[in-house]
Image (cartoon, rainbow, N blue to C red):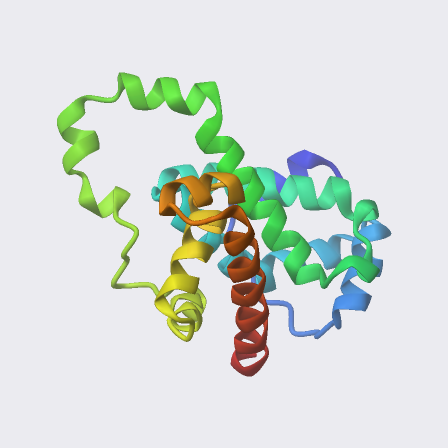
Length: 198
């Protein structure tokens, strides 16, 4: 299957695939470059990835560009996935997050922002707002609300705004060791909440 096929798939509406695959079965299909596996991946994971990307880039237009890159990266990098290091879902979420952050840092994106008329950019709250009343990003916002406020802030800074732990330490004016401890605790709590949510 070529990248052209992937992009065509992303740009058309597809019927949901009725077969259910476990993560392990899906990974085998993807490693075999099986088109059914790709269809299943897209149909079952695109909503979650879209929500993560949209929270970072804050624009539906940019999200649609980034999500294409994400699925191409997953397809091309599937042999790098190591189940001993974490779940497949976590792996693809990290690909989506990193791709979105890289997109925001890219020169092309920065130039596009500079060239955009100021009133459209500043006052277009529909496109730029991180709050979307019509969509709850597959309920992930609800999961985050299960965390204490300080843990929510850490997750938001690290995973949605791309801050490093050192940058978080400087921004919040707390020791780096404290940031690391709080981040570890936040991620453990989030993992427990996600288990309950699923």
